Each structure stands twice: as C-alpha cells, then as structure tokens.
Length: 205
Picture 1 (cartoon, one colour):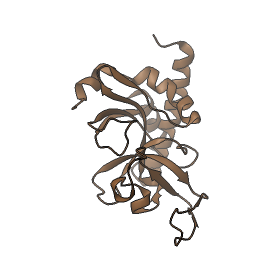
Picture 2 (tube, rainbow, N blue to C red):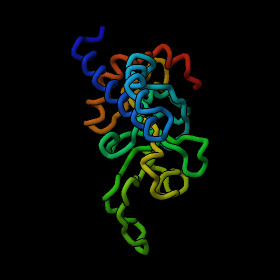
Picture 3 (cartoon, helix red, strand yellow):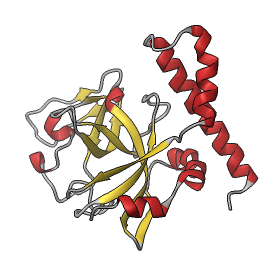
Picture 4 (cartoon, rainbow, N blue to C red):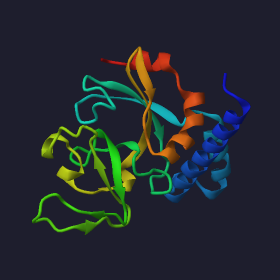
C-alpha cells in the first residue's frame, strides 16, 4: 500500500516530468503553444515515467549481473546537471553505435577537471553539456570497459534515463545505488510504478 504522502510526492515528480516533456516538444515544434497545456495534462494522467530495459555484460558487475539484468529505468525528459547527478547509473546512447544503448555510471559533468593516470596525457576540463561515464567493474581496463576512457566525453543529451531498480533473478532484485539526491527523488516513483512480476516476465537470463 502506497501512503498518501508518497502519492503526493509522486504526483509532484510526474507533474515536473510532464511539464519538461511538453516544453521540450514545444521547443522542437512538435506541438503549438495552444497545445502545451493539454499535453502536460495528458502526460500527467497517462503513461508512466519508467520503462524496462534488459542488458548484460561484465562492464557493470556487480551492480548488474554479467549474465544479464532487467532494469527499471526512469525516463529523463531533459538531461542536465540539475536532473542527473554524479554517481547515478544511466542509460545512454552508445557513442560508437547510436542505435544501441549502454548502461554506465556518471562519473563527472561539465566543469570537472579530468586527470589521466597516463603521465603523457594532459589534464582537461569537461566543457558545457559534456559528461564522463565509467563502468562499475574495476577489474576491467581500457577497451574492455567500453566507457569514457575509450570513447571520451559524451554529450549530456545522450543520457535517456536513470536506472532505479535492477532484477538479476526472481529472488535477487532491489534498488540501484545512485546519488543520494536521485534516490530521494526516485523513491516515490519506485513505490508507485515498480512491478516486480512484470520485470520477472521480461527477464531473459
């Protein structure tokens, strides 16, 4: 049973999401200024803020099992440093194969100074709207990790969602450890939209 206070926090999150999504549609010319209000209410009362995503690979172990995991992802209408934070596990477009998506942890955002462990490489500062993503598996090096150490900084706009829950098996599942701020923002979304049975049906491992 979801408490009234949790429902109120969920509605507030969904209204913010609906507003951002509608404004984004207006800015790219998909809707007119007269349609903005109706679109906000449509997003608020229809659909969800989350979707299921399945991934596998050793890059994000132990957060996500190497044999695969079904993820509950919170869709981000806008990806910027005020909505996604260092420490968050995110879904982003694969810089090398744009039709694919990667799951990595956000390690740095614009303004961060990046210092290489290779002495010959000069430090640099991430520019506006750039971010740095890393795999969780510390045993992987170089190209094995397939992260920013291989392909460099990526645009924040390539981030499409934040992973908030992971199902590794029917008996092994739980919230993903993200930044403290994100976990606070996502807790009412998990409480209302999480359906472990649906995740188990979608699971391929």
